[in-house]
Amino acid sequence: MEEPLNLVLFSGTDDKLQAAAILTAGAAALGKPVNVFLQYWALDAFRADRIDTDHGLVAEAGEVGRQAVHALRAAGQASWAETLRQAKELGGIDIQACSLSMDLLQIEQTDLDPLVDGVEGVTAFYLNAGAGQVVFI
Image 1 (cartoon, rainbow, N blue to C red):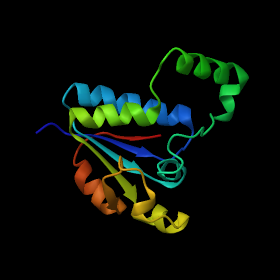
Image 2 (cartoon, helix red, strand yellow):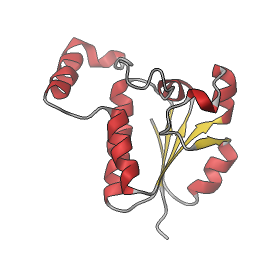
Image 3 (cartoon, one colour):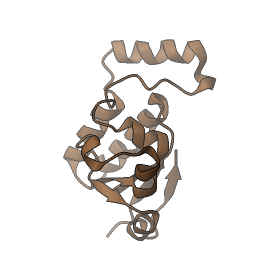
Image 4 (cartoon, helix red, strand yellow):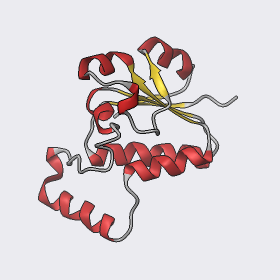
């Protein structure tokens, strides 16, 4: 079995979440399994009542970056959440919420969008990661 791509998502800005979604979709299109581990602000962005809202961009994007992102959306680029939904349809994508981040942010699993498959601790994440590459975003 091919080693998975393992993404640790920390940032909750739309640009970083979009980058993670594109990496996930690309791996899924190639049949490569992907484990996504949601921590802190990324986890917060996956709340069911917030997933489709504007989560801003990193500061270095500036106004030029914001305009570029808005232009892509106006041209029909899928949101990061929709890109992840499409990737999950291809199979092999597992999205888990970090149990410690859940406690810190006082989030229950029922607060999360159905994209999130469950809750696990960091040890379980590393066990599932195997010898696969880990990318922190």
